[in-house]
Length: 566
Image 1 (cartoon, one colour):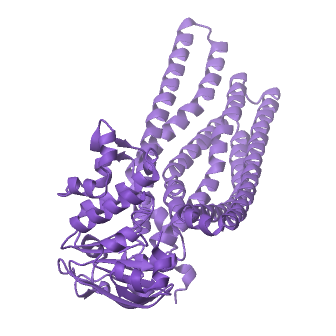
Image 2 (cartoon, rainbow, N blue to C red):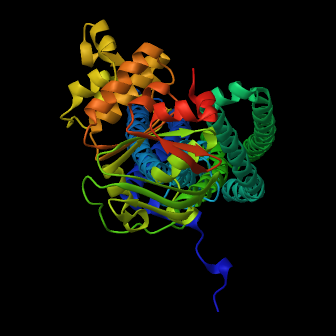
Image 3 (cartoon, rainbow, N blue to C red):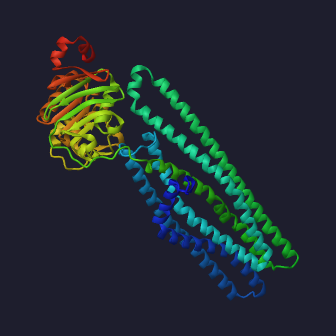
């Protein structure tokens, strides 16, 4: 009966997939790199033969043939290395890109898989560093075989001079690899632990950046920074441990290779002194002893890189092999439908229940920011239906029966911290280039002053994360993007927290005008937006506690007045 240990490990399967997809490039790279190593090895052999023949036949013709032979060898070395590495590095880069795309797809589609508690920062590290290190296996295998070619050619050449020299190279190489294979296992386990700790530190940074504003608000930034310092220090210590292990490995490999080279040189010298090999063979043996250190070093480092690639592949398998959280349904919501939240319990939400009719403009005033975040997670399908109790219906159909793509096409949930991308104002507002309401969205979000401020207008270049825009401009740009999408249902979370009161009033009126007849939900404590809504739902302690117009609530609810008054 098969046991779990007999099943193929996900990391090993990823490595096999990478090797199988690039078999052609690896064969070509192995041939070219093998030719490079053979030509490199031929150089000291040719030098020894030149010395041998020069001592026997001191003619200009022999010298010319020797120089021509060296020129051919040098040309072969140069061209085979150049084209061999070009083939392998292109395949390596392409394969790393494939894995990055797959891992990123899982990270950008969080409802699809249960990634065992990994945060977005950890997934980012896996999609970058681990994908690159896994793809390195494509270069490692050809370089391993090409280094083996060099060792074999050197051993054969030395055996032709004296069998003892060839045996010394073969036995020494086997001994060196046996010692280093044991050390490489420690490198693999240490590297895997380091990658996990670095990923946790990256995730902590991502969490800090996202929550920096509320942390400052209640004075929790010092505790958060202290938490990051501990995680970062732990990652630093593990990095130092890995560096020490790598240093010990490299030092041991260099020392053993040097011992082998010295042994070959001394043995060749002793044989020449005894008259058992010629001077030319001595020159060849000493030259090979010096040259063989480089392919031996490369050959001895390969187990280390294999272990690192395997450790990275195992981390990628955590994401790629994670089971689905839920299987989305095949249905699509009816166009222009309503939104219903029925008894939802998730995080701080305690049986939340409300309905927004098709075409209605509703504002939700949350007294606790966390409740707003939990509601946004549910509506954005960042929390899959199995992750919460209750039901959310869109156009009369439950979210569990709808595909995630269909939900997001029909209902856009725009977070307060939406990303701004490098490009232009136009590509940020309308990434697909298909919006029919782009001018209206720019005007409604009061982004017209930013457009008018620059000579290029909507083609004004935006740096990554909107570094050349103010906080208010970034927020208005994000709002313009949401409005330009012109979806049937639009959910906005705190869309005007970074703009001044006058601009906020204008934006509130513009949103109500532009979205007239389309279902709109704004989660906010802004008096301007609350006043522009058809009705306001008060979200307190995870449930709706009051419902009326903004002005009626101001007149009759003191707690509401204190919560939203500015």
